[in-house]
Length: 377
Ligand code: PLP
Image 1 (spheres, rainbow, N blue to C red):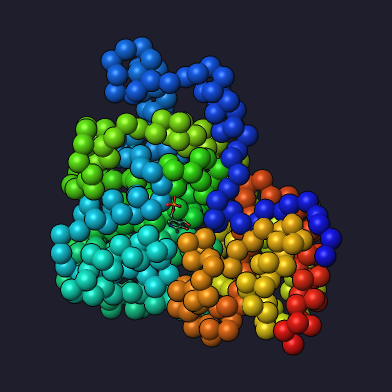
Image 2: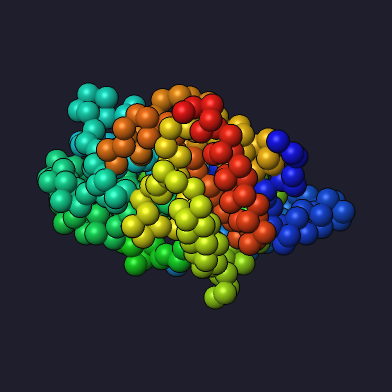
């Protein structure tokens, strides 16, 4: 197979830095901007201003007060801080499709009681009837993601919040795969806690934020100084925070969110040109950027490798579970057979994907399927 230019379609794993972020980083390096935001001198004050401006921009995109935004090291830490920070016992309800950073945290917290998982329907949506049964008077905490990392399916968090609050439970939402991909407001959703991550949306890795509703008491995971309202002690990652602030400025613009045009064109062409493929969660509301395709009869690992040789970077599941040959939790929860799960490949576009990326990817898929279907008849 011939080598082609790299087409990166693995943006749910991580994204390239935006030009605006790269520009800001260059400024920081060239002007050698540094200082501890907690220092009283001018160098510290300058960096404090950067941190607070970023907090303001992030708050604006989430529709909350800046004091409700706590900077963390990313999605995993935000999820841990939220769940470990509020949990004091009682039943936890989560979805069967959560990222490991929620799923494994919840399982470690609810060891004795066991936790309840809201199942998915075969179309990839959340089973609200089950949610209504599982969330009960003994439930103290509910954690449901806004957009699924593997299929892109958008879950009805507002509905979940209504059920949980009626029964006295708090709600955390992992919005890592939704931030920068769809408009949402923490006020409108009604959540108590919500996590985002920088590197999933063109900012630096190692930076994230947690929305903590005003008045909600949270226990920090670390002890230390008074940074981030004592919820996240330690000198702030001001370079990362600046990058998230820059991205938030962009997200805050009316014209930011792309349409699902590229994804739809990609799926339409694949379905037309390649026999025996299916798109997971095809019929449900999804974020604009995610296509999860079953190439029947072809192991996803072989397809990912063959596409890589063609210069197309994709993934066979979430980055944390890639390399494992265990069927994905999300796809299993939708009722897919192990074989279909292990033949599912995720293509995830970004703000900067182009129609030429889509054409390259389609042609490569056609070529790879042709070759691989002969090896795996
Ligand atoms: N939550 C979801 C839904 C994710 O997809 C990811 C990363 O893949 C995370 C949380 C973890 O985010 P981070 O890599 O910033 O720790």
